[in-house]
Length: 339
Image (tube, rainbow, N blue to C red; front, side):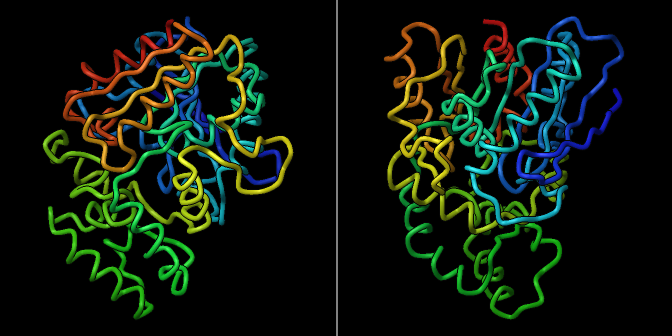
């Protein structure tokens, strides 16, 4: 398995990166694009598990492409929002894949804020070449635990007075500023569910669980250690938009660009696109009702074209990080690509 790293210029001039993963045999299926969430990177899909999603896709003959969009911790940091990703990142990525491969259609597996922003782009009609979307954790409708609502209404304004980012990697490299150090120490006191400080700060940053983004029972010791280096800064600009979306109950644009609808729940989904909504039953970042309601919205408008899967005893990232994900979650994603 070898990586081909391809610089990609977003529609607004920001530098992104595509990673084309080459397997031992030439692909006989079309291209599939994998899109990570906020404050991570495309390496999210390659934890030290028995068989990663990337490895399985290669084994199934897919042409695998990973996107480091503007939220990636491998790129130059910026104060990004979902609108920018929807308008500038995904259309550029899909166009580049089509140009490079000659394929007429591209399939996608998208997670969390990669999924919400990709959903915005698709519903705005900006991704006409995309035929299948496997959405993990969140998409059109957003339901969060009460603790997360309190964080966005109470803690977010306070945090904005001392920082413009939250960074779980402070668990490895504590900030120098006294207010931030005190905040980190308080967060670690509140989250004492394990001895991995990055894991604990991830739970402080996202969701309301202990931990928030996975269940420790589903992760190997190697994956729990590996994730220390997979989370870093995420801007408050994103959290502010997400708070507005959560208040509305669904995706809303952040700016006034007319290419994006003001209210995404009032548009019709694109024709000819198959959606598969996937999440964990124990997701404490976005409650599983988020994906169920999204599926119902799509199904009312396009009956019988879409699917939803709720994985028992899985958390937010367990479909990618879990030790049994290759036999429990990956087959559902593959089914979503084949339909």
